[in-house]
Amino acid sequence: MIRVMAVDDELPALRQLERVLRTFADVEICGLFTDADAFLERLRIEAVDLVLLDMEMPDSHGLQLAQTIQSIREGVYIAFVTAYDEYAVKAFDANAIDYLLKPVAEERMQRTLQRCLQRQQRFPADWGEYQGVSIRCFGRFAIMSGDQPVKFRNSKSEELLAYLVHHNREPVDKAQIMEALWHDRDPVRTQANLYSTVYQLRKDLEACGLFDVVEQSKGGSGSYRLRLSPDLCDLYKYELACRQINSGAFDLTHAERAAELYRGGYLQAHAYDWAAQRQAELEYSYAALLEKIVHTYVQLRRYRSAMPMLQKWTNLFPYDERVHTKMIALHLLMENADEARKYAAYVEEEIFRKELDAPFDADIERIALNPYEWLNRTSDG
Image 1 (cartoon, rainbow, N blue to C red):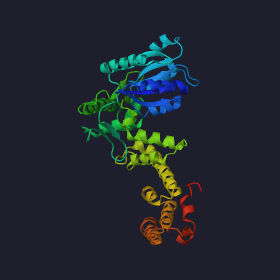
Image 2: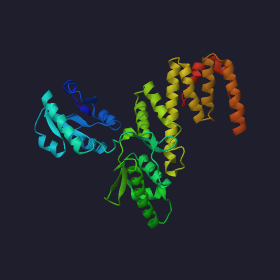
Image 3: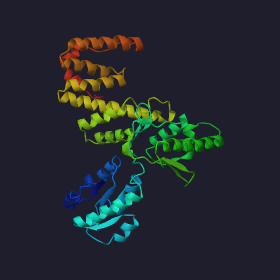
Image 4: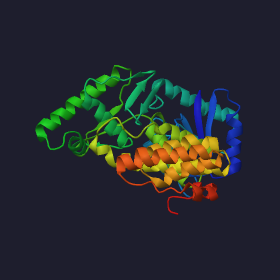
């Protein structure tokens, strides 16, 4: 099966490509895009084998876009599609596997797909495409091979892998790694530790069939980066979902799936100092996500669906009066005044007085006058 995406700012041309591609049983169309930015966003989370790319677009020339594609996914094959043949030489200089003239005929597309298959047999489609591999960053860090976690010979190998994941597959300078993992240690000893840890990490990964995952650059002072596809990592998928939601493209089902990915906090089971800031940032983004989900359910009058999401929110910020007030309001909206009073009493006695030695200022009678309004109050109002 060949996974294909196509990019063309002209919708009729894009539809014509789609019709041709649908005639091939071994082709899966993973996306059709008229906007280059939307295409790149999808490419960061979804692995494909072949991109059919228009050479001339208003906001991005095909050759420039091809460079960006290859920086995101090194193993993706590119075929240019254009109405003109003047760029053919430059296209093949850019390592394109083919150059097709519009409109693309079925037999011409077949040759392009055949070239893609031939190259796949010689080289891996994507260095990150390992069957059954996934990276878990929420809760306990783990890289899974099938149903089994990869076993690390020592804790520094595991931390190094987590640190490379933390940097979003970007090259990380050796000096930066040594400072993060062996702070204030002897430089000579630290460099030896780094080399032995990299060696051991590669051996641990290779034992599970994961080869060429850690890449070393000899340029400058030297750096390392991770070569696993972003769609294999729960952190990358969660952050992308949050960016899409914050851009205004809120979808309840999509938001729920993002919330499911969080699973207890970023690297929560590990005391990594270098992860602290991102832990806090992700925690607040998760709270904002839960707030949007709860408010959406309330607007839809789906109060029972809102309850578990609001419970997660209160667990995240147990000393936040505003969140507990929302829980009381939700009980009242569900016409369960007794539960609202029990909840208020529990919060006051077990959380605020025992742990904070402070009162819990919640007026149930006042909340009961308009519980819907209390639930829809945002963090800034």
